[in-house]
Image 1 (cartoon, rainbow over the protein chains, first blue to last red):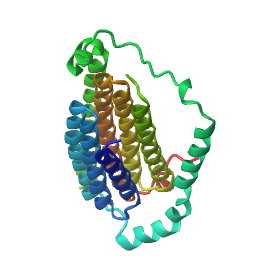
Image 2 (spheres, each protein chain N blue to C red):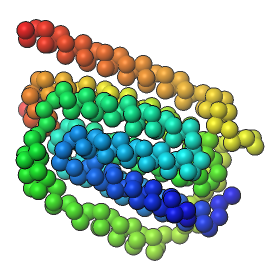
Image 3 (cartoon, chains in turn cyan, purple):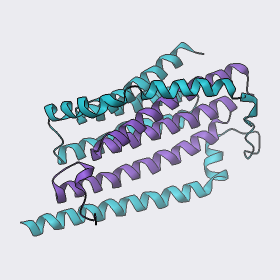
Image 4 (tube, chains in turn yellow, brown):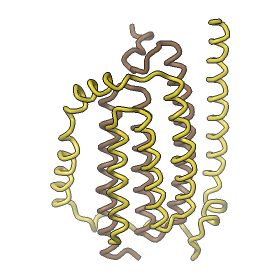
Length: 171
Length: 107
């Protein structure tokens, strides 16, 4: 294993845990953005450059902007309130990752790796070109993506229209 | 071509994915803050993205894994955008970001 892969993987897990455990929501959103950036680096190292660019621009950029705008438009708990909440509730579950890893190690002893069929058929031809796969072999995915984007756009427009109508009535 | 080294790399990636799943599950179930629940959903999506890319890297089918991941990223951003709108709407109605305060329909 490449040492850079190891460092990137450890950084990814650490940043994701930081995003989850941080009492301040804004810092948690920043931690999530950094985790997305590290994941994009990891994906680039594994040869998935197109997906890495999408991850960096959309997840580390657009989704972080959405989170920051939601945090700014709402009033989350204050720092003392969030710290008290963290001490009270989150501390109970700190053993959970160790339990899961322990179960995983026990499972790995009895699990035979050769049982998994790794030969994934369905990609015909000698090309491993991303554009060929995306446009020619998975056209339904493109149609689905367009439908989902349009659904999201209309959903957000309708939601914010109701919010602005509600505020106008309140005035 | 799957070798012993690439299989080992996949299992190490699977451990990272598992830790991300645990962190996301922990975030969603323990916290009742709506924004933290969205962060947990995001971490789940990161874990699945890493798993798909690692599987594509190990089997040599990176193009197919990239196509699937791009679809996943698009769906993820739409979910987060719509969920953010719902969170803002819920905050405007109830004045709170706590999921336990959304009890208007409780019988």
